[in-house]
Image (cartoon, rainbow, N blue to C red):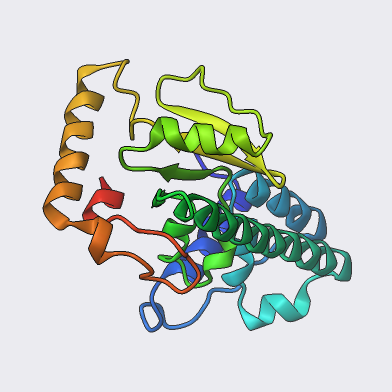
Length: 221
């Protein structure tokens, strides 16, 4: 299917934002009408690329944006950055709560993947995904004792909301009840963790993340 001008423009912006410095001679300029810029923002937001797309703007495009588009983009990015700050603050609090009770958090996806982006705060994510090695049930009990309801109906993880942020406490990494492929990959993920000794090696790897982090090949898989 042929991509529209707006879709092509979004691809250019994302490439501009994510390509290593020097990989492209310069950021490409985008030529769109005023209504098309509005449609691009809507598409970028739908794809979770609202802030990343802005990072890919050339200086020419920044200066030539209509004022209402620039304001809409700026306000949206500010909200994304504030949400990231709230999510990290919640992660800090949960880490402290669990550590007091002898439980460590292994972070999955989310802000961990943000570290791969030029501006980590601009990589949007929804839930905070955590894994409590050997302490899935204990983690749920800790949260329930805080007076917070925990939904344990799922096979893969429980769910709860802490200070307005949705948290998934993983019992397993994948949906191992669904198919053999997930079972095989789940086994490999545990092998990687056991082999790397990540529960010691990756603690406090990033000052922003007061938790333990899995090795890169685990996250890639």
